[in-house]
Structures are given as structure tokens and as C-alpha cells.
Image 1 (cartoon, rainbow, N blue to C red):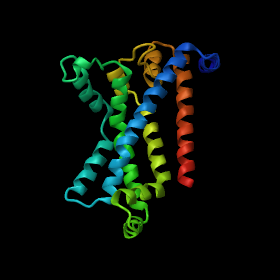
Image 2: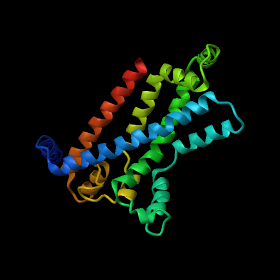
Image 3: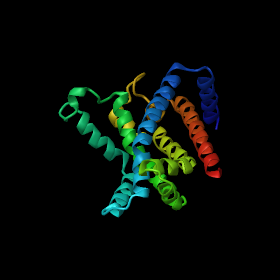
Length: 228
């Protein structure tokens, strides 16, 4: 019991003293996750909106594929992108492996299907007469889609927040594509895994508390949006 208490006290000291190692891990996590969330929103929102309002052959197959991508194991994403970014891979000359950009790419692949699926659910739950009414009043298909997007804006925001929550706590892709390099690609999750294995429980606990706080804020924001 004293071990846990001592570790908790030391973890709080690391947090409130703004320890450099802690700050760098937190910054890397928030930076890569934030960039990936933006990119996944730019990709996922149009895809979800398009699947929701379009009717075409193969639509059901496309939705099934999207649902499958939501459950895609992180190690599989990391493995595929590792092959693409490695020196022997087609993107090897770009030198992206073990950089924050590689981590952002992997996290985007993980978050985009989540955003797209939740936007699709929001479109399906909206009043289907919005599009038809807008078209009747002379709007183009693009203008009608924009109007629908305004109506489901809270659902879209919830989708983006859910995407961020997915990647900020991710460890597999961050470890495989980032390499857990100190002061460069070490995130909160990879640092927790490394430091705990080294016996630095207090350091891992400090990052775990911060990560839990971030997850709490994300879920609070999501709940507020859902209530509205």
C-alpha cells in the first residue's frame, strides 16, 4: 500500500512540477492525435455524408467495408504502413518511418472510419425530407448536402470527438510507426508502456493520470453534444 501511495505522490510531483519528459510525451500525444483528428474529419465527414444521402449499387457493400474498418486491429494498420514507409517500401525514400508524420498517418487510418460511420449514423437519423425540400426550393445537390450537414452538426462534432478519443489512447500504431523515440515520437501511451517495464511506475502513473484526464474531458464533451 505504501508503494502505491509513494508512487502516487511522486506522480503528482512530476505533474505539477511540469517535468520535461512528461510535457514532451503529452505534447507529442496531443499534437499527433490532433492532426490525425483533423485529417480523419476531412476524409470521414464527406464519406459518411455521401454514403448517407446517395443510393447506388454497392452501397451496402461499401457500408459493410466501412464497418469492418472500424474494427481493424491497430497492429495490422501499423504493419501495413510500416511496410509502406520502410526503406524497402514504396514510400521509403520519403523517410517517414519513425517520425510524427508516420504516426499521424496511422492514426488517421484508424480514426477516419469511426468518423465516417458516426456521420453516416447521424445522416440516417436526420429528417430525410431536408434534402428533398432543399432541392424543391431550387438548391443544388451540394447546397442541399450543406444544409443537411448544418442540421446534423452536433452529430458531426460528436463523431470528430470520438475519433480523437480513439487515437489519443492508441499504442500499437504509435509504437510501430513512431519507434517510441525520446523527445520525438514518444507519446503518453508508449511512454507508459516503456517506463513501467523499466520499473518507473510513478512516471507511468503520472502519464496515466493525464491520459485519463484527457479521456474524461473528451467524453464529457461528447456527452454534452449528445444531450444537445
